[in-house]
Image (cartoon, rainbow, N blue to C red; front, side):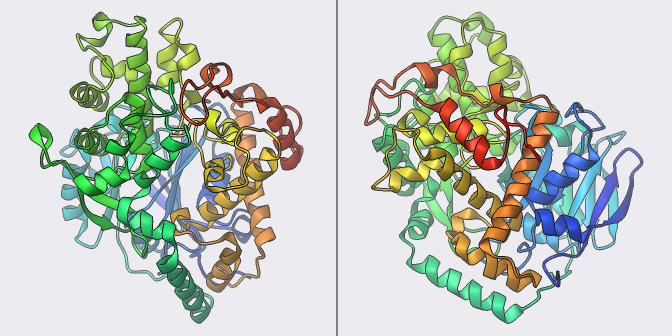
Length: 591
């Protein structure tokens, strides 16, 4: 029986008519999909038919919390933004931390469905029982920090704001939604907001989340905090951020370098988390209710970049804006990360598409006539920052880059083999030739080229008994890891809080009043993953899309610990993974 964790209602906002209404959140949906990524997926599937243009008024943007969100539980400030991806046309649910998720829950709603398209530039303010529509004409075109400051002043000092930058307004296909430099980054949700003429969503309120058993919640929360205080990974995150992974991944030969041409980077130690801590770190910062504080405030200290401040860069950003484009100057990476936040663009896709363009230039497939006079030389920090400016403004050569790697590669004959994406979403910052299970993780992830949703197989680097270069047993492990990732997502708990999945039933039950076991939560996770697969099948995705760039399948790594390795056994892993999921040989769910 559900006694807490939910308000049992969500908003449906129609921008076309400037109207809103409250909708009941059924107990059946809560029980079967729990929250966050799960309910966002369910509502998106039910409310939006197949083959809808992601940037049309008929496309929905769904924002949803989970039952743990809005409490004081460590890592509970997470919220999910769901839409069809304009970049890949696949399902896209992307999360955000920071302050906004907990502030959203204080409105007294579990989520919101945003439909239609405003006649003019608009921002909305959600508060308990009300939605106000405001003109955004005077903040349209502003970068995220400037626009956020103005909107927050108008919405009130106790409000929080999630918004798009110039890239989202101009529908750059990998644009993001930003709040205080925390981003819902992947897949182009910012472009979906921009297509609706929606600049920002402000939230405010003081509604408290109901909790079934506060004493039990406090007890498990105390245990989590005590475990975090003794966890060396959590302590490392606090000191160096997730970018502390750069040197270990480089040592394993899996660090994307020169657009995945190599697996190691000579400058890795100069641009990794330890270097950022030594040269750029100002302090660690945490999301609401979090004690890990895995994110850093970093400042560029030298030359023309001096004084630029950013939150991050996280591991993925550091790698894709660093080794992938042969940049080892942390001041440049800090500035690049800052610009991506200000324009509202995904750092992973940005670094990937710049790396792709640089390789095209290296191979003579494009020239300065194509780039507007820019010489796209590897490691040129000034060029990297200029390209980010062009992407963010959607100007000149930046318009072509802003399409993403898949579309850009179709314009350049001979480039497809090194266009590093899956299903149109640019690859994350691990080379699967150095850990074969990661190949499966990329291939089956519902959003495309990301590492988490298909199974976070990179964990094998830290397992002494793991055979990195075999397909044997990887499907079963990927299935379990992807279920665990989904459990965090549907509860709205950050995985960087290092809470064991075995503790999540007790945590969720204390808040909701249920009697879930870990297997119950895994079944809910499987429900969500099956529905994501059905969404993608409905959009036309099949087994042929569960593949990798030709480079990873056919070109052995030339260097590092994994020298000579290329991905093997992908088809075998797919067969096994589909069978575990209860899908047929083509990856279509049988239920």
